[in-house]
Amino acid sequence: MRLVRLGDAQSAVAADVKAALASWGGGDAVLGGVALAGYLPPGRSRPVDMVLVLPNAVVVIAGVDLPDPAMRLDAPVTGQWKIDGWPLVGPDPTLNPAAEAVGVTEAVAEAVRETGLPVRLILAIGPYVGQVTQPQMDVDRGIRVLHPMPTTLLAAVRDVAAAAPALTAEQAGGLLIHLCPDERFATDELVAEGFALAKAAPAELPAKKRRRWLPIGAAALIGALAVGSVIAALTTGGSTPAAPPQATAGYTKVDAADDGGHCAEHAYGDVQVWLSHNQCVNLRRWNYRAENAGDPAGVAVAEIRFVGAEPAAQFQSLAEQPGTGGITELLKERPWPGGPTSFDRAAFTSNRSGGTVRLVETVWIGRPSAADDPALKSIAQRTLNLALS
Image (cartoon, rainbow, N blue to C red; front, side, top):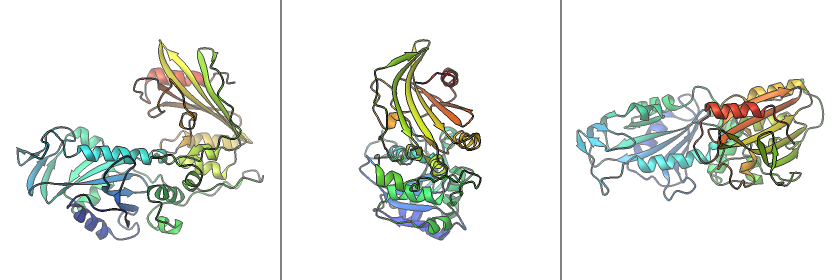
């Protein structure tokens, strides 16, 4: 694991965290990845002790200094902490020691959201604690509370990380440039830390001249960088200006864009990398408003056309896999007054006709959404047959 110092430690136990990471050594023989010490997330007033950027997850490690060593710690993320059965007392007895760390983790999650990586939290407790009790609900959320002995911390990081690598060396380089622009990371160095090389383009693709794209992250940063997230460069040339809303079979069209062949520029994650090697013919995107029993929903539609059915099928297969990125919704590039604030936790579906793939996302407007919401899934499925204009 490579350690990069960006700022000062915020806790005394951060020294134990750093020592544990150093004991794992460089490269991926033990764990791999890049550790950012003292990273300051966007919108936060204080840095966090450590952020681990791994091939399969991002792990925030925040230090908590107890007044004295403890044999037992009861540490719910919400609620009263107890040391050896006694309530933990501080300057503000109503404040949970985990509250700030949870807020920092949310800021980090927003900063890396477009990578699709899970973001987990580890609370490192000092000067010492023998046994920690956590509610199962917190454990299920990927939160761990522990004293950072090297083996204990390593086991926790491995436990909360995803099962399989999801970030290539090229993607990791782009993300790290965004998180720490003054540092430089060579591709071969990141490969040595466990990040995979991007797959080469399939040999059977047509031998037409392709546009050359920058790797993920580099294109986004050299083009236009949205604070708190790594997104594709925003190119609006050729986009269709927003027209007055048009109603079509229960749907109201709010906005549309014809992006021509600039598919990779309006994508993120592994989907962007794939599109940078596999040129599309045309990308069109829409925002629609739909209703279900009087409840308004926002619908994001993207149609990507390829030269044939084979690359279209490859693209659809990749886009349907969780955590591989996708096509950037118009909402991220242009305002939608009265619409949803994001397409997080959207219901998703897709279909393909020959060389054209349609992707659909649906969320509620004005209330929380869930990807498995039956009503949202029904709207998404219905949108696959909507006549787009």
